[in-house]
Image 1 (cartoon, rainbow, N blue to C red):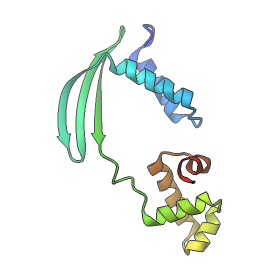
Image 2: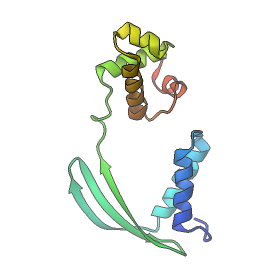
Image 3: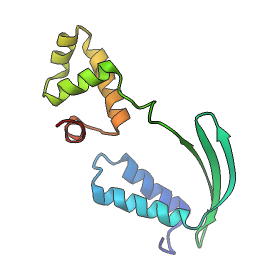
Length: 138
């Protein structure tokens, strides 16, 4: 990390990358590098088991800041599995159908399909139908 950057400046950059609608691989690599540099100065000071995961606190320092980071790591494999309904909606999105068409075919409201699409996006960590098709569809 450049000596001129404070911990707050690094976090501001990471927030900007995370909130950007354009999640280009180069920007994500930049975020990973910032996090790696930041964490390279840390030592683990506390670890405890929590329901479904592990909580830990790390302390570190840059040339201008001393900081503490608390993280919770949890297993999400089972929690992020698509439901049967979400799988069906995802398949229909892959086929290019609109939300209204999917709702009619499934006999549910368009709002139900919208909700299922939001859940699919969250679970698969995508932010558009194009990303969904690239990541999920054959």
